[in-house]
Amino acid sequence: MVHLTSHFLLLSVTLGVALGYSFWITSIPNALSVKNPCNGNAWPGVGHQAEGGSGPRNSFGDDISKLALANPNVPAGTIWTQEVCMKDSDGDGMTNGEELGDPSCKWTKGATPEGRVKGHPGICEPVNDPKCAGKNGWTIADC
Ligand SMILES: [Ca+2]
Image (cartoon, protein in one colour):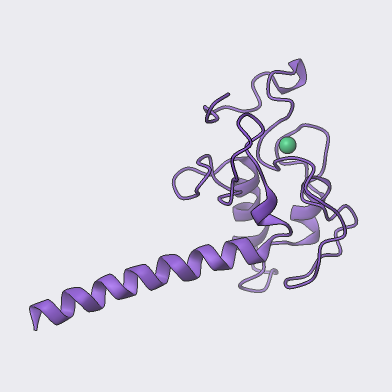
């Protein structure tokens, strides 16, 4: 019985992580095309400080949390709202929508985004530009 229970727990945890990952990457436009501006690695954990996700959030993740997840007027399961799309979370002069290929903020889950990814919505770019001084308050891998 103990053996069965531990297998059930492992399956539940694994399934939960898989569903979570799938939810996030399908809930913002072009999530799988976002790259680390410093080394070109894929950055599917778009709202986090780590390329692979989990752990502390970056400014984009903080905005999703504040503007969508914690907003009672936003339906559960929706994170790409007009407000999130139109915000420049990282302060580099491009809206999150412009960075993720949805400059008109019209993308809906499952649709093909209007454009391509132009930057990372949670990293002020170019990273070493004076306009970004103090805006990326964490260590970006390989920068
Ligand atoms: Ca950026």
